[in-house]
Length: 168
Image (cartoon, rainbow, N blue to C red):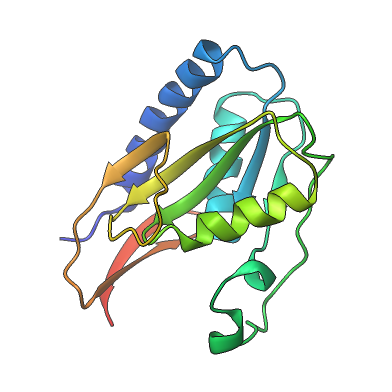
């Protein structure tokens, strides 16, 4: 059974409350929300809006930072990253749609540190499907999902947001 649009909305409500608690518990003032292109940006926009964050949001396109860049080549839709300010001493809320191997997050961290040294980075992901190749875990996860090896999950959006499970 494939998750639906309603499941994404429900997960976003849960994630908003978990993120509100994390920001409060860590005593973070003016968190810098950064979404990883493209699904992470859609999730970040929703969470940013739900929490009424006044600080501008940033976006990352980690294509040039991927460790498989030379093997898979450049995606023709690569766009520049856009951070509203330096990451130096900022509390970053890094957001992605699906976390799997951890390699996308590693690439995002590498790029973030090129903009400055953050005070902290909290990771938020809509879906965690396991299969880690690197020791990376999210602070907030909307849902854990197990997929068969031939299955793939993709966030469709931005309006409405829905999840699609397909066969490779």
